[in-house]
Length: 169
Image (cartoon, rainbow, N blue to C red; front, side, top):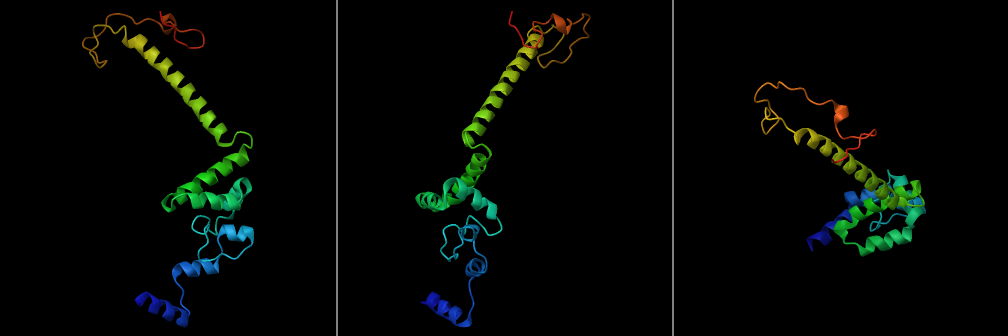
């Protein structure tokens, strides 16, 4: 009852809520792009602000407004912002790489991760060749117990090929 009275008084005085003011004064990016009037219950307004027109343009080009609307309707309200962020990312990647899209980016990252894991294995093997033949004058942490009186082998005597790959004996 009190809420109804406040609404009536707001209408009479011409006052609008903050949300109504921002919506009516500027349309969201989606409504601007689609050249339609942005209503107070516009589904796109919370996610496609008027100051980011390219964001909706990319999503619209890849998915279409109708499909984005359907996707947002199927997702719980608390997950819609993450959904829109995902759609924007997927659209940007699809526009950069029309053939592979996100899968291409994922495959590239997985390939790079495999290369780094390979490099890590090589580094550990190289380290093991030094630590595995640890002289008795070193403690468990690699610190000196007594001064060494022996020479360490040259790096070329270690079991590495010309490309720096370790070969197990």
